[in-house]
Image (cartoon, rainbow, N blue to C red; front, side):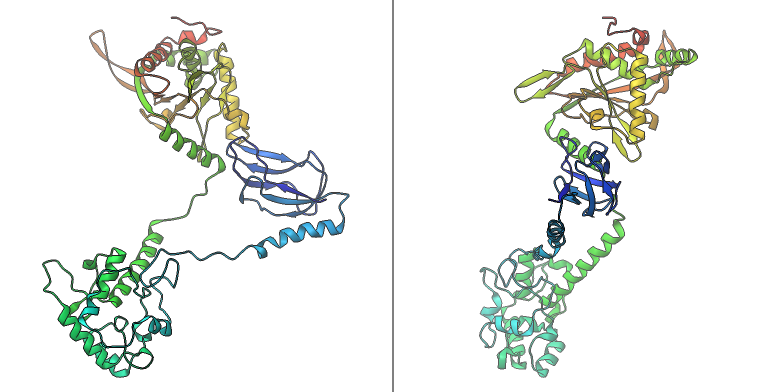
Length: 501
């Protein structure tokens, strides 16, 4: 039977994937083990190999499209497949769009004049006959009817155009002269047509039912008041055109139409192009939101004298050894975490669990994305060894060749924004880790030294902590050890994990 190739699940957290590149085209022969396509997952861009041999007959998902895991993306014909089998499967996919039910119109909440989801929206005109049929029995309006006592709303809330209301020519002229909204009047003529006498009776009833306006009140017809109350509209924002400057149902219609058009124009002026998020960025966003919502963060910070680090780097450079400040930070983290293993831990519902290895993740900005490849098993490794491993990962990140294994199992993260001129900041903890180190730029500051004032380089370290795993005292002790190591960087050159107590 022909095979459906489905969007593969290439990482344990992957829910959807973006199809980056098809390595084969429709009609191409494919062999088992050949790279068939490249997929962008929440962890990395990965190649996917064909698991069968045959002919790529149909591509269902094009390059650049994002679909859920398990979605059919292509059809492959095996050598043993018959034409009938192939046609049946292609018919299935070709017929899916036609068989898909038509979109269901959006159901609106219950509105005056109808049940939930019934009738056209508030700004659409209703057919004349429907409007007439929904009116009460034809008779002259009375003050009691105009008062509209509290009840479940039965107003015909579709703001029909007054010109489409059935009315006699004389009634239209009178309504236009007096500013009357014909949609508020129930006609007593044939088929519910509004007569001139209906308009006059409605005006008399309106005057009879009017109360002296209080300061700040807005004069409005009872129907307009009922509609404004049900929609939560502020009548002070509406200009009335009815008798005596009253706000009518027609005025509310014009106000809502103008507001809707204005909102669209403001949105068009305010918002530009939408930025499409990569799968990795979507995953990072969900992870950071979860971290801030579920992890009780607290922060401590210290200033580090960076002169010894600068001197060590310059010395190693003269020896032909390329060691950066980031490399020193990774080695210092390995030493400090070895001295404080309770910091290299995570929170679980049943308590705190220590990690066995020291795996340091280093946040790296690649284009418009942030990735954090992990230097594994840092304990006991020399500075040059860690530098080489870190550089190799960063290079893979820049070439977008990191695999999920390169991201996984971090136990401690270093985020350095010093190269962007940032003095200090606090990063968000990456679950399931309990700490994250934020590193600011190296800057020259005034330093009091033996009663004299001089200029010296300083770096600010900020430590974000999960309060379920660490308390303030333990976090301060760990950060103080980190600072001590950086200010005595000869310890960074010692092989193994030995350092001063």
